[in-house]
Image (cartoon, rainbow, N blue to C red; front, side):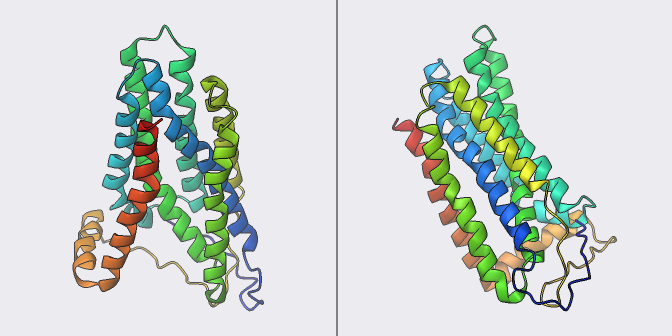
Length: 266
């Protein structure tokens, strides 16, 4: 994945360098996940009320099966890709938008065959699950290549505050809309689309000596050999164990409980 940079700020003060990009990234993710989190949580209950007893939970399972499967190879694919980070973020964001919009189908098309609803819902889940690894890997790359060494923690904190606020904003917006699924999914589709458009406004980062530069990918290195390096990293590097443990904990707490356990108690 090629990252274009400007060289005119190479010796400039790092204070607030590329801050506008960090804010755009955080706001874009806030809007995108404001729409997604509430829709993901409500979808199983809406489908259950319409007679699809387990389709909603199967939909959530499909999302994370594809997320897990492609999450291991997404970095290698993006490293060899010529698409800009902005293009990847926008395309992945639109996959989130379509998933939310699919929630309108069972509520607005009562005459549609149940098989069609099931196929469209599961296909939509597979699409968003396939795009999610590319969204998050690209987010990490954008954050890295926009952060001077002295501001890495600050910029990461700014992004996390913006992103985590989506849990609050989604709940506040969803509360008065939950009784009307059509309005619910329509409004949240618009919010997620606004998030994708916000990500489209990201600018190439201004370069500085303390900002890491992306290494050029080796054209002779196959995708398979790049992916096969992952087991070696997991086996030999102690940092990999911490990363894996943190990822499992975050996935269970942030996604598993919220997406599967709480809707079943509704």
